[in-house]
Length: 148
Image 1 (spheres, rainbow, N blue to C red):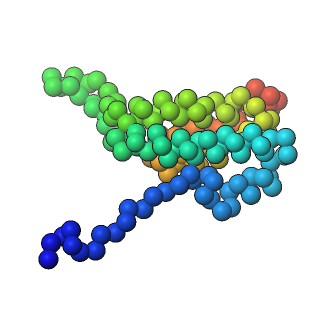
Image 2 (image 1 turned 30 degrees about the vertical axis):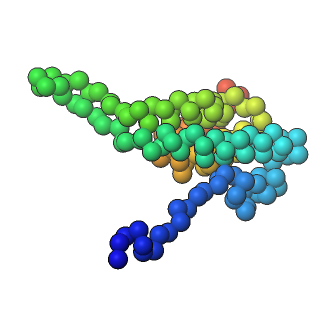
């Protein structure tokens, strides 16, 4: 018996991570005010489609960054080498505005929820590219704080 004649599983296809989630859209509708919800819902749905179509292709090219500490002559250089996929994903996340969502405060106090939802949706596809966005979310960096 040849391999082609045996069991051939059908490849699993994933849909839009936002619209196919049974809980996330309804949770956001309950948490966000009615004037913010439609815009956020549309934006997250668009991001989900972008993740399925373009960003997954870049994700296949990602390799972990590599730190090169010394050159061939033994001199210290401390160079961080990243793959094409890594640089492409970083550029896509910047185009999505993920680093700036927390600082721009477009939806006032709900900007953090929106930013973290974008990070959540992208985290499964973008590996670890957007970790820094979650670490510095603007809560402690916003200019409207009085307790500095």
